[in-house]
Image (cartoon, rainbow, N blue to C red):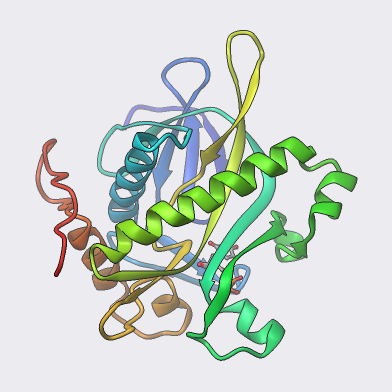
Length: 255
Ligand code: UDP
């Protein structure tokens, strides 16, 4: 790896200065954290798999018109992305109750929600990413109303598309977290684009037949087989990290 200036180091990724202005290199680590950093660990090979899975999903989303920060994958652990100004709001979309919503409303895990629910969390580790409403977002100036509209409608489109994509490979998309950024063009026009990553680190994915968890909950709950679950998600999506350039074959639809 050439020596590059480190811009930011997060829990699962490092951002480096990109090769040209307006770009960044996103490096995927094997490190895993949960419960707001209380639990730390390493999932061997996770970074390589997440780099591939996020590349694949961002490319599929771009094909259906979702603007993203993704440019191209550079190598096993790195991808080139457009530099954006991250909106400090985490958008969570839920289809089936799991995790924090179960505790908050005393709902049994696995209960289908009457409709997809979109929640916003303030992206702030010190505060433990608190749940917020649109009122907080606009009052504190984290995003403007039209930006919230864009994030909401993009998140619902992404949910529809990914729900179908995962169902096609025998996985139920329970919930997931998205992050957005502001991308400025040459004329200083701004648009909201999907940023960060979409991987089993920030999604809940259950096997359609067995309800087996195929995501970071295996790490959160010490269930074992974490790397194997991520590998299986990649395999079902038609991604085999061992092979070369032409290795993304696309999903193999199950009957
Ligand atoms: N999530 C995430 N980062 C966070 C919080 C949540 O990626 O900081 C994802 C999480 O993996 C799950 C969804 O968002 O797919 C909803 O998480 P939830 O609110 O249930 O939180 P948790 O169970 O992690 O406390």
